[in-house]
Length: 279
Image 1 (cartoon, rainbow, N blue to C red):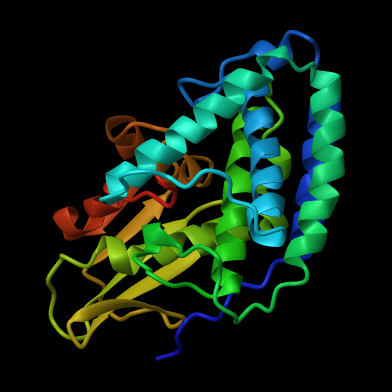
Image 2 (cartoon, rainbow, N blue to C red; image 1 turned 180 degrees about the horizontal axis):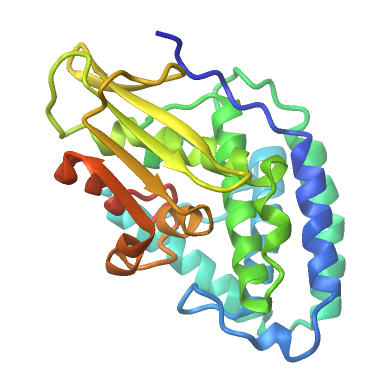
């Protein structure tokens, strides 16, 4: 059985950022105020959040400046609440900033962000672990891939709101997002019991989709390259819905209409609760 290889996609950030600037420059004044699938955010809010991502990474990771430390973080939910407040404060402050200035700042900081992550050794310890995958410590390649999923899905939220989402569904851009997000599967299924060698197959349709195979070995779930024989369940998710399911962009009830399950229904349906974001 072959474990999944690390996802090394540092160079792809430059292209993804170019796509972001391209779509933002194409927006009409009305487009900036369109509602996205993120309930509290319009298009301009998400663009501001993406700028926050650039600046926060450069400040904390590159420059070692973290600002005031968080208080009373006793649980995962405490951390989520803290991060949500940071995000809300930033977006609120940027209400007074014009789209033109926002685009310029994204272009400047985006290049610096891409340059910085290019300096990281993929196998060194990352500044932050990938918590949604159950890791207390992560290597840089996984942390960087996680950051790609953040940038990808926020840009896609913008594109979905303005009807320009097709460009990010190509294999070049979409598959890395899915491949990284699916690394949450072993942690998500950790409380599901099975017999030694049991496996579950997950398929995402579309040109940017793929297949992931989850195996139960030595009392734990692991992802492997080989397709399993006689899987407990085969879960097929519509490509344009998969990212929304994994990023809290669609309700469980609505998502169920875009998923086909063959085999053990309870085992397969657990994917409906999985998130690959801090939420």
